[in-house]
Length: 421
Image (cartoon, rainbow, N blue to C red; front, side, top):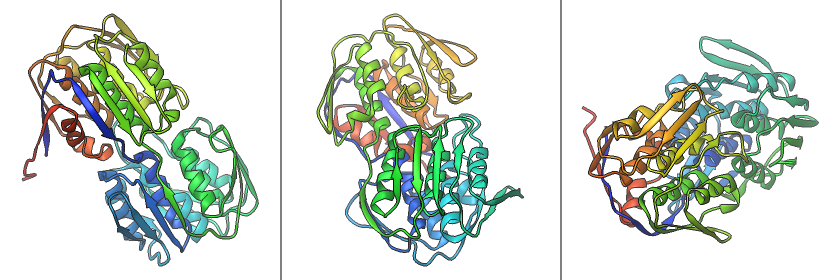
């Protein structure tokens, strides 16, 4: 397994080009199953989760082809399999997003129950509840969700909790259903808005995306479309946390600051000077960070996907920060690794108390999940001495060439390739 070696202490200066959002691209790739026509996508990030999804779609008969960098065409005219096997689904929970499109267009699906990062329970019961309300017959058998429906019918669906993938799956199912579907308690993330904008370009009739009440009037068929994936707000936030911890002056290009309100607010509280334009963000830091407490909630509140990165910033801040994680129950696994670097963090259930210290010290640490990996990179940039981060395959699932982008702005960071054998 590859690892990263970081020598801390360098300030960051320069420009970073932000990639397309993984969490927008994955459902959009699955939306290709809704039509026999071709989708032309741009700003598609080159990530492990993207290649896994393309393998899954290829196994079903979907043809994909990369053009210029970050440009991808998809065609699902000749789907030969309606099954998502465990071998591919086990590594990535977003694979469940083929369920709605397959059921909507073909009337049946057989999808393995998903895996992914070990950050907590992420059940698919709300997906099943919604599809059942739309007339699907669903059973769980031998680790598979097996679903059938002649044609889905519109329904009013209220999920028991806000669920991003649940909203995406039901949205994709509803666009080809007969009649009107209303999704109550829908997730409001920018990635859902991006998916809805693509579906509208394909001929879907959708209102209210970006709010907690989405109205979909089903159509008979969808057609091809061209679409640019929205910028990755989590990657942008990660780089801003990096400059907050290491100091310096960076500008993020192709960013989407209008999707990042809660994160930008907290970074400014921490002392990072932030300037924004329509598609750029400048972050400038020349002092020790101030401690900032926060609670993670669904969008537009502070995102759980930024909790680990801002915690890393808080480890060297002036003061004490209280962090409450309200989305995933196992999302403090990076804490024990940060402690190896000298961080003073106490955990009580879903709350972490971080007492800032003047400086972390480099150590060998292990990435436990995607965002934990990013927090360790940030800690390593700010630490004295050398930090080695092992098991960085987690990082490659969600960050495109992170070490290359960091080197371009002055970080001393190297990837060491290791033979799996």
